[in-house]
Picture 1 (cartoon, helix red, strand yellow):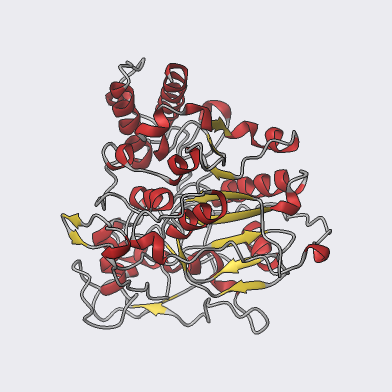
Picture 2 (picture 1 turned 135 degrees about the horizontal axis):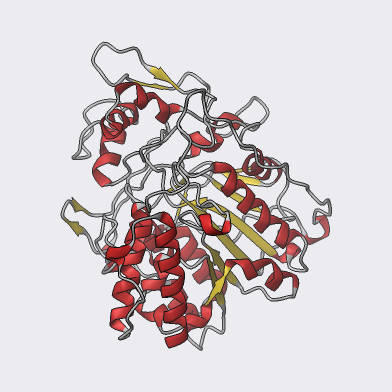
Amino acid sequence: MAATFQHLVVLMLENRSFDHMLGFLRSPTYDIEGLSGTESNPGPNPGDPPVVVSRDARTVNDLNPDPGHGFVNTNMQIFGNSDGRVTGPLMQGFVKDYALVSNHASHGANIMKCFTEQTLPVLSTLAKQYAVCDHWFSSVPGSTIPNRLFAHGATSLGSLTQDIAIAPSKLKTIFEVMDDRRNRSNFRIYTDGASVLLSNLYLLHHQTHFHDYRDFRTDVLNGDLAEYTFIEPSYDDDAQNGKFATSQHPDFPVDEGEALISEVYRALRDSDFWEDTLLLIVYDEHGGIYDHVEPPSLTPNPALGVVQPSTDPPFAFDRLGVRVPAVMVSPLIAPGTIIKQRFDHCSIVATVRKMFCLDRTPFNWREAQAATFDEVLNLERDQVRKEDLQLPNPVTVAPPAGAKVPPQTRKPTDLSMDMARAMEHSMKTMGLAPATNVSQIYTAQDATNYLRAAASLIKDKA
């Protein structure tokens, strides 16, 4: 029987589809469900030639403005209509939807641009040297917040939107289950001062579980690693300290996220925990970017626990979102491993419960039906890999000639503003008053400063 892991580290990045990031790794000797190079979408206007997938994705400048990735946009991309009705071939609405979102017909083709092993070397190398999951789907056909809630609690409490002041605050997460003294398990959440989880009412009062990402490597090398570690990237620029966002959310530099992946891998590889740890690198949702695989439908079973439906728009959370990249790293995984089993973010909840909790009762039927990945290691203990894989440097893909250089002073992202509003809500519930108001956030730097200050204020109070 193959070994299992004692520590799980999850790094969840932002808004990229499987085909966009890893689809072109497919080859005769590496048979992932990726791209042949002939996949296409209809052009944005009647009579336009089809737009074929291409190998020329760039670090920045391709996906500005941000592609649509809410529930209605995702329905348009999958079904070609806002209602999610099957009226023809699926996965054919990406170009049209992005042309509408960007308000520029020719810009719609950018949604079909994909990376290659040469332009995305860090994630590609880890995928091929360890394991890639080519059927990992986002939990919700929609945006970041509901998907991240499913990753922690197997539900978004009926929310399909980015409104994070309500659902996240009330959500019972797997962290709360782990904290039960009967479970005797431990976890940590590493952030750069911003997290959907910081607005959760339970975690608000248990702030000792939140740690600064800048301490991650030191902690691990000093022999301090929780059973379950969840790492969040930085979600917006910090120009005052010369840093870009590492989330890979369009249109932040993808190479910055590659550097973050490399940092996390290297910290674990250099530690005494290496042989007992599984690193999962996964993305919360597809970000409106093309993927050719149809998301599966699910069969609800309320007898296993009810999943609160959305009422506006009506949705029973009975189908998955678009496929996303997922890579698993361990010295007990053979090179070139391709995992075909279907997972979604509820698999994280289900696996953590199975591995680290005595309470085995799933939150609901979504968690109960989600596959766990506690048995993905395919080497025996006496076969542990000893090589020290050196990852290539991230690659900065130059923008096309004449492309606009991103301004030094960016506007805050919608996600940063959503998080800031949630933090404001959290502080009010604790009787705290921030030094500035959300209404005074005008730039990405303002948002970064606000979120860090708010997180520090909450932590001090708790």
